Length: 116
Length: 115
Image (cartoon, rainbow over all chains, first blue to last red):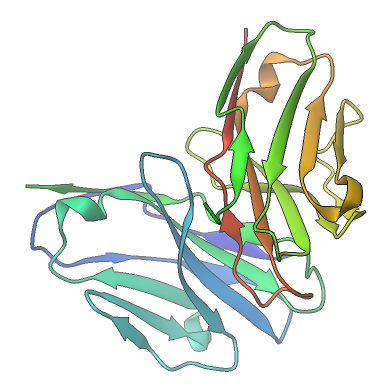
């Protein structure tokens, strides 16, 4: 069955530091989709990025970058020059295309605190 | 507002009472999902609808839980005879299309506290 592991429960950094959030997944499907969501204190999950299993290109969006490595089943998220507004819980998620395509499976989340 | 909206945002109830949550998805989205999130955990899938049809239910959804989506628009999630273990955030999400490729758009959630 699909599984997402975010081993870092909480991370605390000082503003302007770089921080990487780890995500490791398990799936038996050959086609799958990986996601990152941000959940600020208001509670609403905000979509950040989707990655297809057949596209291993890394992606950069402003201060955010994502490193997808199928060889290690990892989809890590790096925030460069962190800011206080980045403080939130971040979730990695996985959807399978065939075996269980109705259930987006989330990790337990990593709570990031950025201190001024 | 074109996002997913949920009502009520907070509900406090006594054990044994029934509660109902409502979700209004993004209007053009044909798929609607309910998730439950407890403290320190990620969202857990409960059920989903494609238009008005409820196509899948998680084993987490006991027979005290029922969800509907009449006319394929808004959805309701009812919990009967609430238990303290039902205390959680209930999240609604929607998306367009079929399959699993698209991202989910989430509402702000309905927080349930059972005393």
